[in-house]
Every structure is written in structure tokens, then in C-alpha cells.
Length: 74
Image (cartoon, rainbow, N blue to C red; front, top):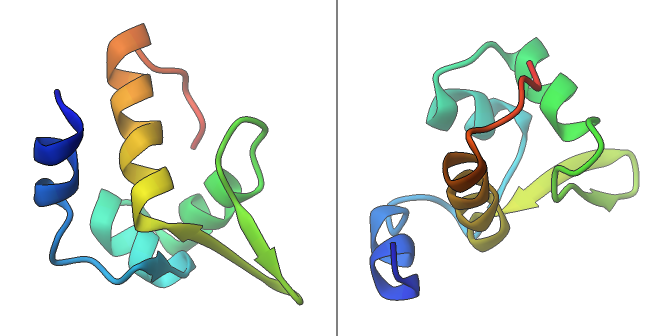
């Protein structure tokens, strides 16, 4: 998928997602989102005690997971 299509798919999301927003976006539990945010290789942004992910890094990570067949993170 090219960068333009990749970005357009996620236009409705906030620029930066917290664990609750990530959980809702991926259809996983909040605990699962925190597990993902704490996993190696996931593009987590840490601000103080918060764990966040940017929309663009999430989109890139999803595309990478699809391309390589994905790993189980949650």
C-alpha cells in the first residue's frame, strides 16, 4: 500500500493515540493495548508516565506487520 493510501485510511484518528484510543482502533482490550505499547518493536512514544503512539507510526507498524505476516503481540 502506498503512503498516500496508508495515511488516508487513518484520517479519522487523532494525531497521537493513547491506550484507550489504540484499543478502540484495533478492536482489542485496553490491557491488550498497554501490552502492545510495552512490546519491543512497537513505536511507543513515552511522555512522562504516558504511553502513546502517533497515527503515522501506527499505520507504518500495521503495514509492516501485514507485509511480514505479523507477530503475536497481544
